[in-house]
Length: 508
Image (tube, rainbow, N blue to C red; front, side, top):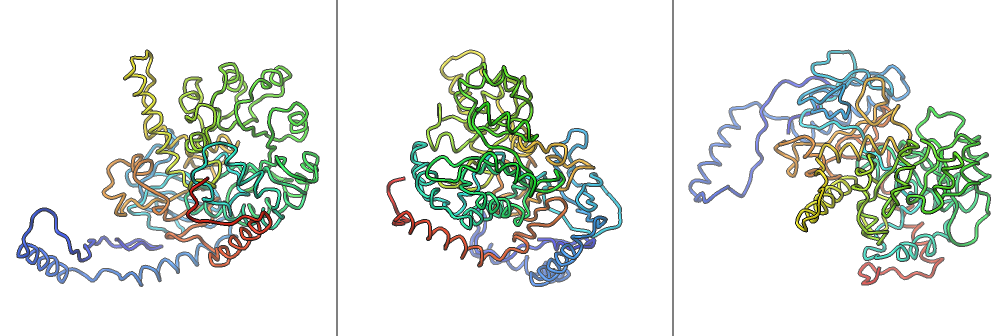
């Protein structure tokens, strides 16, 4: 691997490390000849930098990045990466650079020469950060507890009805923090935190504080608990929350309401100037509130499976946004069990992709992209096979990456700030290694991101120009302490419920 430094690196030749396998049917004699040739060739070349030297240089670069955090004029120049800007006006670059000043992108293009801290992005693909517009972050410590869930009742048995009523503010904090940091680690730089377990004002405070502490870009969508006793401080508490934490929109964490279709709630959100996120496509109630003028472009709808044509039309006409859930809908048997991507496309809408929760599956957007790609291709082919007319056009990997980045950010109401690598926007940038075993050699940049890469290939993450993951590790995160918090919180919830944890359980 070429040494990556904070200053330009002289061209060099990468060497293969020793291998015990040889392609084809090479005999032992041929293998020995090949090995001797490699060794002889290596001896004639300059000694490549050691891994220890690479680490030392990376550590020095990271220290410089951290020291410059409070400097609004600090410049970072990402050099020599493959750039997918997701902005047709900017374009894409086989080899290009991104110049960051403070929290904003200053320039994107080839051969940028500017003063600033240089980061070698060779053999990396640079993309806008992934955006998850629908995440129930408070459930972070419940990861993987119900892998065989079949229905929404199975989900509720482990969340709203099961553990939700026992959550303390501390547990909300831990769940949100674990979720947010897991997102950053996987290249998700922006989420809408669909927070529906704020049982008291203190619970809301804890959820919001965790988002601020994590460094993620988040929209806190404050909602009411669905089961058990709670203070019924919501939605009135939104006034206090807004005044306390959200006097400005120019910050990483912002506020909206999480509510089903409800005239009183939606009017209250309108009074406070808040967006509203709603589960599903509004059902039979949406036409009525739309007729009252309460549906506009400050609304986001999750899932959308089984949504009537009229509701699709109303949502689109209002300029509202939608996201679909590639794994959640089939996992929990929601509506027809097929993510509503084709429904959105058929109605002229470009949806975001959302993870929903982690109680049954992982946090990464890479899997969501693949699942929705193959669902659409499979349903399309099934229709053709059955002789159905008007088969939809096949989605492309370019479309899928748009859904996972641009459209997720659009759901968050932040497309004016982030979502593309565009000069003037804030620098939410993910660097994906394109030279790892599973991603090399680079065949097609979009395909590598959508179909080849996984969360382990996410090398570096910037959010608003601040480095949050560096060379494969989260920055300023004590994982040992975090694990302790998560395990202790989960055990407390187990004890309160009287739940016996079986890591080999047959049932959901």
